[in-house]
Image 1: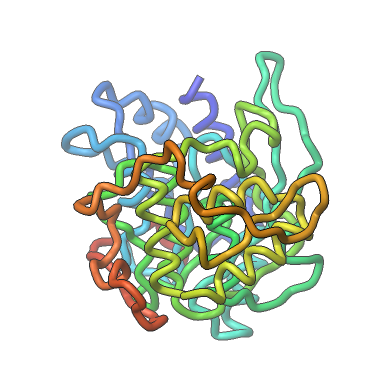
Image 2: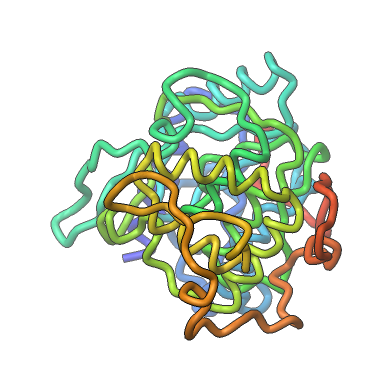
Length: 325
């Protein structure tokens, strides 16, 4: 099924009203199943590049976010094989970024559910729900607060300025969901959000199964949440509490307090009463296995320093991405 999805993704790119692009197809399959599809279009703008060895899903996506261009270009974006672009996506993004001199843009996504009979439009625009119906700048604190409740950003909706920002997480993080969240935290300055959906994201499951609150409490998420708490301090929980009450993510907020070991300093949200209540520390921590102190999911050690002052840091390493001239 993946080759057919790749064909659909590239067809959406070829239909773009912005023609000055180069697409690098990063094939992580040892059998090079994407080669025939990529070359079948006969378009020199589509460059096929198989990986020398299998990287895995997370590392292959991260390769696309390397900060230096493969073939020149001013901006970069990522088109995963199961997603599609609206024909105006690239032109709108490039015009907006040049107009605002932004280093990062986050578009709005529209969710489609893949079924055996094809794709079904769920008419769900998650980022417009969170960030509103107007073009605006989104602050890093908002992204961090959202990361405590659900996924922070979408890889598919990001467009970034090459040589202007580094969104590569690094090899230490092999979990795609955590990697995507960390990527949102690497954006150190407010980024531009465009509310009109121009990126069509495919989900193999319903939004209710993907939304926050259902993730397992484990060391990886706990490490991430503790890092967010260390970097942004109490204010990120205050912001997350407001978002949780507004969007119905009370359970996710409760889990975030536990995962970040903020129990005793913060309240939990009572889902049924929709207000803030104090919950005893001994009750919350009963049966919870604490963080492996050696686990660091691609984040700098200083984020884990107790009572660290909030800071903005450029993390991790180097390399490159798919380019827009």
